[in-house]
Image 1 (cartoon, helix red, strand yellow):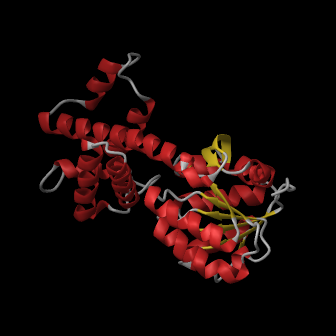
Image 2: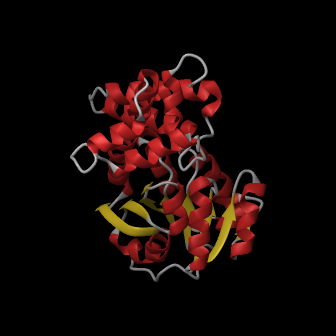
Length: 297
């Protein structure tokens, strides 16, 4: 593949919590943006930001320099790209940002080979607010010649792009994303569980915060997530049902590598219980509710 010119048009497939903010920032950066979402009404507000909303994935990708997928999981990403296939041009850059896991990425890589697409394994680290502010961390693995093509896309959605490999085949970016997510999810559970224990023991949470303030146990993320619980503000920056999916992908990746991940497995179960209690569409710190058999105090 010879070096290509920077992209001027991009198709965004998936406009949920992450994709909507990403599409807006792409349009604000001056790119021509078309977007598709399974539920069109969720994508419609993007039209006010200069994004053209389409009825089908094929309409979105037709003529696009870059296709960006940011969907629920690898299976949905593959299904959506198959729907887009009639309009995909050979050589099109495909920035695959969905947290797909190792097994699904193999299927996505095979599809890219079949359709002669240039796949960039490019999951992102961040939640709703960083997506809206164009401050995501992009983890990317893909061939050197395609990097100038996707640079305007990654520059618009992220504050930084870290290239960790020169091919999507080795899943270098996905592997790093799974390790990062294992840490994020475990810190979320630790925060939620400590807050639940404090509630159960009648301990003032501010006393806990004062005790750790300024020391090695202090943590800005912990403070943000625990404040959500205490305020009862569970608007999702990252939904519990998506976090459960990611937790199970982490456990599966560990099994493939011969690594037992007890905390990740227990965390997936906490998310499952929270979902069962009706908190699936709330922020993942709803892990808090998994600590109580009945109504949380």
